[in-house]
Amino acid sequence: METKLSLNHKTVVIGPHQPFVVIGERINPTRRKKLAQALAQGDFRLVQEEAQMQVQAGAHVLDVNTGVAGADEAALLRGAVTAILEVVSVPLCLDSANPSALEAALAVYPGKALINSTTAEEKMMETVFPLVKQHGAAVIGVITDERGVPATPQDRLRVAARLLERAARYGIPAEDVIIDPLALTVSADHNAARITLDSISLIVKELGVNINLGASNVSFGLPDRKIINVAYLALAISRGLSTAITDPTVPEIQTTLLACDLLMGRDPYSGRWIKAFRQREKAALQARQEQ
Amino acid sequence: METKLSLNHKTVVIGPHQPFVVIGERINPTRRKKLAQALAQGDFRLVQEEAQMQVQAGAHVLDVNTGVAGADEAALLRGAVTAILEVVSVPLCLDSANPSALEAALAVYPGKALINSTTAEEKMMETVFPLVKQHGAAVIGVITDERGVPATPQDRLRVAARLLERAARYGIPAEDVIIDPLALTVSADHNAARITLDSISLIVKELGVNINLGASNVSFGLPDRKIINVAYLALAISRGLSTAITDPTVPEIQTTLLACDLLMGRDPYSGRWIKAFRQREKAALQARQEQ
Image 1: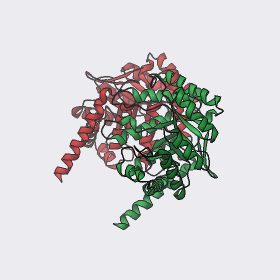
Image 2 (image 1 turned 60 degrees about the horizontal axis):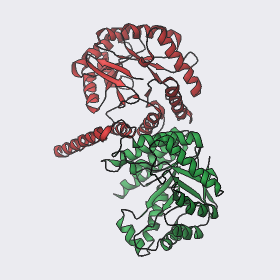
Image 3 (image 1 turned 90 degrees about the vertical axis):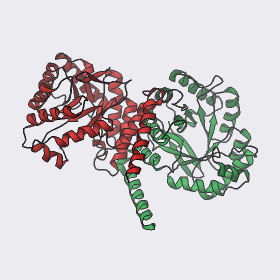
Image 4 (image 1 turned 120 degrees about the vertical axis):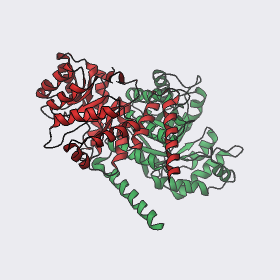
């Protein structure tokens, strides 16, 4: 199944036989004081810089979160979207739990956006799915409902199926719902990541939908988190992960994702691998010359 | 299914719920001129150094290959095994295509060794399986037969099943046959790695045996091979790989394998991850102090 996102005439396709799609996570004020301050003042220059930097580093889509305590999120999300589209041309992932903010941003977005996210809670689905349908968007469906995160892969499959079934009632096709099976922290439960990996296998096999992970939560509370996060992406890709919200400016993440594409048969003639290697070599040479 | 290797009273268990087992690959004169020269002169000091270095770096088992053109391989393999066991205490993987060399080494090996390897070629199985049975060893069964490497996962499953069936005729249980589904080079065929990954899933599901890969062949002919090899290990572990012949002295390999154990639910309380992190910190501190 393929999820197509677009911005004007530019399309990004997420799917099992497509190169892995990186959704840049950096436009998010959570734990980023400078960005939060700039946003609170309605200053989008830092947002624009982050957008350019992430696209240059290889992001195919950009997540946009403007949740700052006390600020008008609708105005900020709309403003950020407009500012970002002045400097880059990639589809956006509108990241908010606030329906008015989503609505305001969707109104100025020229194409098919990704909405991040709805859970399987009835109230949330009733709010988000009409917006998705009305604006012809796609949506990330997070596997958690009124009772929290299901414990087993089988229960997570059931919640994923419910998300698709409810979406269908609103006329949203399954390919426009990307399932997020949630990465809980492995330091709190040593089986947390394994259960998520098994959930990915099961959901891909039974429902055939695309899978997204916000991959960095898994390593919370542990040292050397980057190594864990990179390994987790590879483990999940092997099970069918087709996109992730992650930081493309971390070189190890980019190179591992390219290596996974190469090894999963999505890089004919090793073309993208070799091209990226030459770019790294060129950048390293320039850095040496500038010293 | 669990494969138990031993040296005297020390046992290493390979299995789906066990920490990943690293078989150190460095005692092998192929493409290592200095080691080949030392071996040709019957000098095992370098072999001993490599053994100590690999065990220190985290190898659980050591592969021992003494194939040097023109030398008496039986004497060399027996000599190397004896020399290695003077300095380290881990089970060994005897790596030779020469039955006399395997026999000579098995005769002096105190425990249950791993034999690397037999293919599914009838003549080879007729030679190797009696040795495995006679010495109570385990064996790596490589998925290639008289017609070469099967093209599809289904055909590789059939060859794996034949290896197990022939081994059983000699009284060798399935748990003592570790299947190697072969990693061909992805630069020659962009689907090569994906087919091997799918073969691992299928063989683990249908036969339940342990899987080994010699993981570095996959990246032959490409730049930045280390990144590819590390990603390949993670992708394969996600499918059920339980051991690999690889280089434990490469830090990225060791840390990724530990991260994979952590994420696959094989590191309760993150204990091994945190311990290894502290060791890395301590080593880095010592290195700075020595400067």
